[in-house]
Length: 98
Image (cartoon, rainbow, N blue to C red):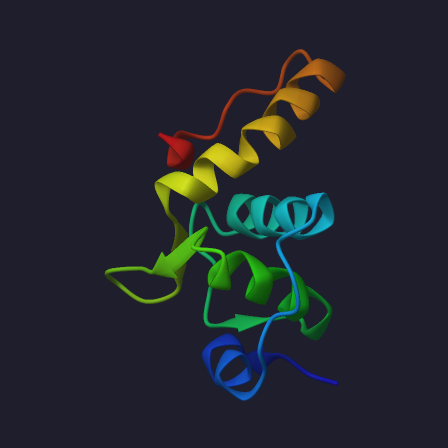
């Protein structure tokens, strides 16, 4: 299965439940790969995770396309950043997190 348009997929399905730590990790990883923006086309395996984050208010439509984290999304990712920094002392907080 190829890449799906995130927005189209979101409109077709409703999220089931609050975001889990795996959902938040997927959001963080996707944002890190995109320099703070999740493109409109994401791997199908990421869609359910990102859908939960979007519907929880952790992501919003970016001004130039794609999806960017909200303040609530950044707060939700703080734990992921802290764990990553604990594992890798050279890792620095991404600029896109503010």
